[in-house]
Image 1 (tube, rainbow, N blue to C red):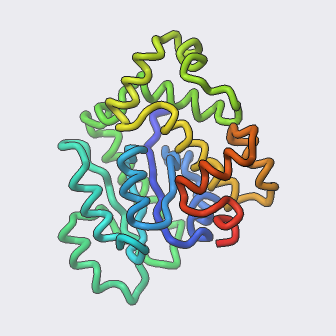
Image 2 (image 1 turned 30 degrees about the vertical axis):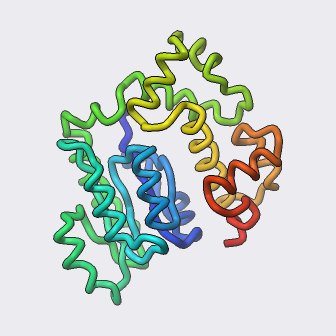
Length: 242
């Protein structure tokens, strides 16, 4: 199934958890490719993960939601729009005029009514999948590689050589493919995927952090903590507390 790629952005971990636990994304032909907790992280994730849809809170630290939306839209490929959904509270409607100017796809009021949320997402999915230019964002070859990576993230042996053998491709070609289409190297993207999966586990389970490290392919807990902090800005335990 061709799934739409969704990036979730909110500065509250409990809301990000709610999006992932309460709403059945696969039923609506979507997959969560990443989460972000501030505007700068959202911009970085959009560059790397190439989402089709971004669900964006307005009140964000570092870079507010509207500024992040403008920056993401400015960097989107021509003919391949990223559909932005603004999440806002009643007292934030003063922002809506600016959001309309930025041509956001829809507005969602907090607290989120997931029954009405579904039709909004379905409408955007139709637009994404009917766009003939959409496939140019990520080639079918890279999509196949990323799918395999996602299915084997728990393995601590995800070398480029092994991946090339599994895909029956040249490792140099795969490396060039990631740099060309994703803007970063294979190992950087692999770590990004692993940390995103770890963030999901940290917010949705009570597993020990050492167990989570192993579940996302880090056999050495110290290495996991170092990589996590370098990418997220806090340690796994601090992330879970916040």
